[in-house]
Image (cartoon, rainbow, N blue to C red; front, top):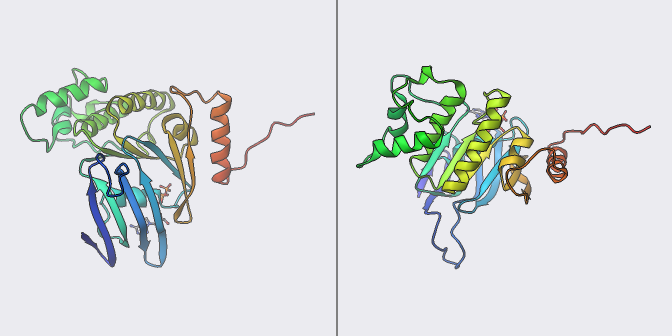
Length: 263
Ligand SMILES: Nc1ncnc2c1ncn2[C@@H]1O[C@H](COP(=O)(O)OP(=O)(O)OP(=O)(O)O)[C@@H](O)[C@H]1O
């Protein structure tokens, strides 16, 4: 159990496999009664959430609804934030952010394997770089990579740790539209190969429906919508069923849709 400043958050490690005491599958993530507040502002209000191992979940919500606060809590990066509740998270968690956070003084491969121990870590790093399409760039400096390439390197750094859970906060938010489309394909492909649980924070409803098998909406400190996306991949925003999911989510986010006028 770990104390949390100003309150108490019980943090336990799940393994993402095996079975729970009740006989069911152990979750990758479980929050029970999770509270986070900044001064008088209660951002997460006794939030309950369970993510299954290998489940790809997207988290939507209006600006300021608390998506990053939830992600940082699950990442255990919020020790200075007041709160309470129970949190079960796996041992191996990788993070990905809007900026790649590569260390500028380390070459790409050294960034990818930073902190990895054990024999074969260089080889594992090279394999991960090849998986994200950066074969031959291992000795480049981060500033020599484009924005999309830097995000590829960040994905390699996340995957080389064989995460049970990948937490991604707007990882493609700073990329141009074309690069974004390519990165969507790459992320889904890597996910299908490695099958970590994924929690992707995004503002982009289409990105959520395209990539995730479950989409959540965070509203007023709790999960207000929990939608299973039952579409085969790859998914096209032009498909009628894709558009139905988009409309449902936009309505939940309070975004009015323009109806075509009929005469
Ligand atoms: N360090 C902090 N100190 C004070 N208030 C904070 C802090 N971090 C977040 N907040 C507040 O908590 C609320 C939720 O912020 P959070 O960043 O989690 O929202 P978000 O849904 O990720 O927003 P966005 O979509 O705009 O990135 C906001 O009102 C924000 O101002």
